Image 1 (tube, rainbow, N blue to C red):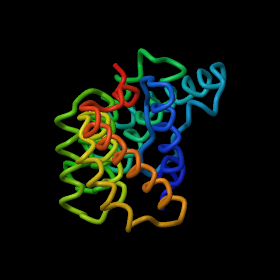
Image 2: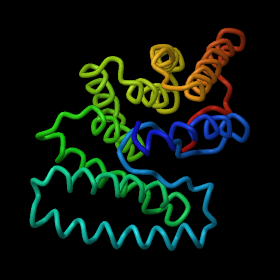
Image 3: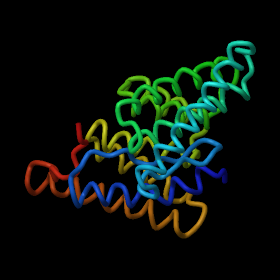
Image 4: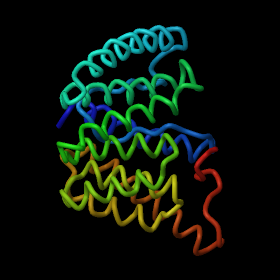
Length: 221
């Protein structure tokens, strides 16, 4: 399991539980990628801003390298990951730049996918597209990744998050998480996916009994 998968999977449940408690907008944490993402909650604002500025300098240097060597798949992948992680940091350090970083991540991942149809990259691009507001591209990319690798837990789990938050499709999300559950790689993942399943089932039950879902779980604008 890659580093980002290890850290991100552990955070997603807490994020969604927080949504249920306070009904706030959020940037959730998904499974995917090859580099660790920063958790905004783990940093104070000053530290986050300093790290974000350092990351922007790294990105600027990589952009210059990419201009010289645009077909370098490894470089484009690393650039996409840097933009992705910068977008997460920007949630605290520079909220106005967050969406643009996700858009830049999408562009870098698209360069990679021209020659390397890697489901991991597809999932990272789909997640970036989700956060940049391109829901059509996000859904298309999740489905492509799952078509290539039907037992890819990262894709199933993340697609469930997308369906529940972007589409308010809790039945669809439940379906994805039920597929992901037997693929859990350890007890912690199994417990977290089961908790997501329970949340989806609660939402569906609320719709059945009340006619509407819990408004605290609606995606913030």
